[in-house]
Every structure is written in C-alpha cells, then in structure tokens.
Image (cartoon, rainbow, N blue to C red):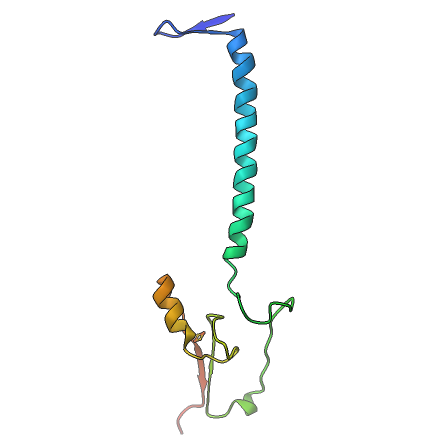
Length: 110
Ligand code: FES
C-alpha cells in the first residue's frame, strides 16, 4: 500500500513503520518532560518559603482578649516576625507585581 501526495511524494508502508514509532516515542518523551517540569514548578510556587518549613502545617491561634487594641498579621509569608507583618510585603509586591498586604484586626473606636 502506498499513499501518493499531490506533490508526488510517496508514503510507503515502510515510511509508516518508521514514522509511527517515532511519533509515539516523541509524544511519550514530551509528556514525561512536561510532567517533570510541572513537578519542579510546583515547588517554586509554594506560598510559604521561610516560615517553619520543618512543620507539616503552620498554624497560629490567638485569643481575642489577648490581641489588644490592634494587631497586624502577615498574609504574604515573607515576614521575619511571622505571623506578624514586618512590612516585607512591600518588597515582595515590588519584585513580583503582586498586591498582598496584611490582615489588620482592631477594636472599634469607642
Ligand atoms: S510582611 Fe507579610 S503582609 Fe506584611
């Protein structure tokens, strides 16, 4: 069997016997490379890069009565005083174009 293209190019059974395995191997290699690269990018996309990395989960809990008149908590995960904001979000926003900021909890003015 042979398929003849308009240009006169002739595809024979032998061409397909070579082309199909090459296409299959190329598709498999592309899939594996994309899986490898997406696995690497997951690590890069972690939100928390510095806080208690040896812990499986970072959790902080506060009693409302202990907060006082005002508390400012970090939401960018860059603060060296985490869980409190130290202003590191400003540098993060400048470097990445992000727009994160702290969570501010305060008592209503009486
Ligand atoms: S330092 Fe993280 S929100 Fe301010």
